[in-house]
Image (cartoon, rainbow, N blue to C red; front, side):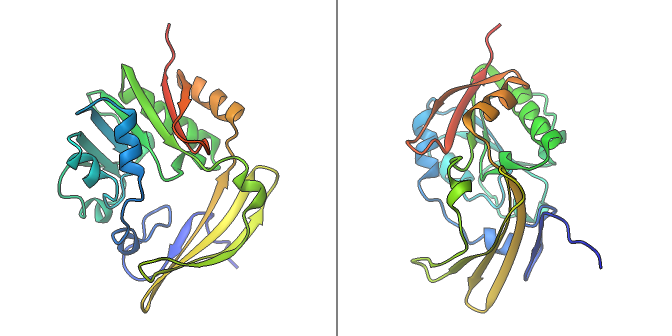
Length: 230
């Protein structure tokens, strides 16, 4: 029997290399994230959005007046973005000949269980942020890893969200499977994530010449990091 990859997905339509269902992501809408980001950065800031997906956050940031470059490794995802410049590339190998006021790494991408990949993600962030700019990261609050359990939830728009598997692979690693249903369409996404407590995250950031400047919310889910001053 072949062991399935730690990141994989199922369901109708294209599936990205890390298991995300393009058709499902194209249905998602913002939930306060653009407002939080907009309030934390300068007016009309240039923004590099890494792992932009189908533009759930991109379009709102453009509407707020920001010049956004959206990066994703899935051309099918990027095809849904109409209002911003797009670049099809893996995050870890991105090398644009320009820097930005703000670099975004959201949707818990930073919680990859692969240490080398995390390091490469952060190096990409540092490579593309201006000396006086910032990097905004999204992680799950560290305490989430201690309490998360399978659940089923009906969203207001009628979609069904289920976490069908929670398997702790150690004190800081969690293998999870999410299931999403809209009408007669169902997608699954299995992924392995790593708890990033404050000390671990600061050490990881320091390895890319970045440091935590502040948390943008009371849950410490949103982190603003800045280049280390030399």
